[in-house]
Amino acid sequence: HDKPDPSARHAIDDVGADCLTVRLATPVWHRHHGKHAPLRHVLPGSIGKVVLEELIRRREELGVTRVLALVRASDPEHADARLRADVVASACFAEHAPGWEKRVEAIAGDLTKPGLGLAPGVRERIAAEVTHVIHCAASVEFNLPLVEATAVNTGGALAALDVARECRRLASF
Image (tube, rainbow, N blue to C red; front, side, top):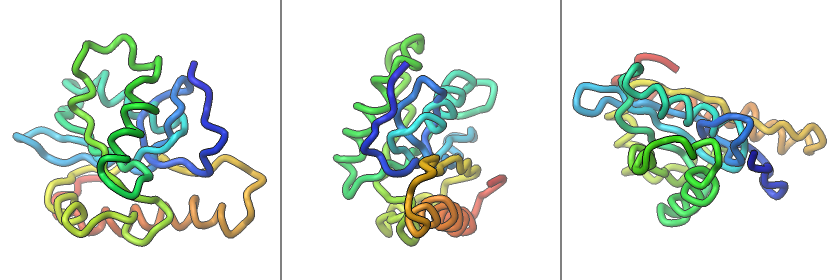
């Protein structure tokens, strides 16, 4: 099992299980060639990895062709590097066939910022393509200052909902 990153202050959507160290906040699915693809928010944490692993493992059954994962990062390059280091390298994905990670795209953002901190072009892409949103991010650090805990746990959920409301093909949140 990977150990959680103690410097991570809050979780963002990612798929995974207890073996994951990346936290994911909001997975979203978009249609791609008639199939569903999830959009996920990723940060060091375990719930997101578990969700992502489940989506990848059951992709044919669920019709998932692509997962967009929101990763707390200021730019796409940093988001992709974090996804590769914190999620793809996780032991919980060891049994997947090589190349599974090509189905997951890191999206730079921040759960605590308005609109999830998404760049305008990325936000429009999500609004046009996403059909399902899975929000599973939260901080489980019970000693966080109330303002910070509220920003992550309540504000993050509301920001994910706002973005989901813009999704013209949304089937579920």
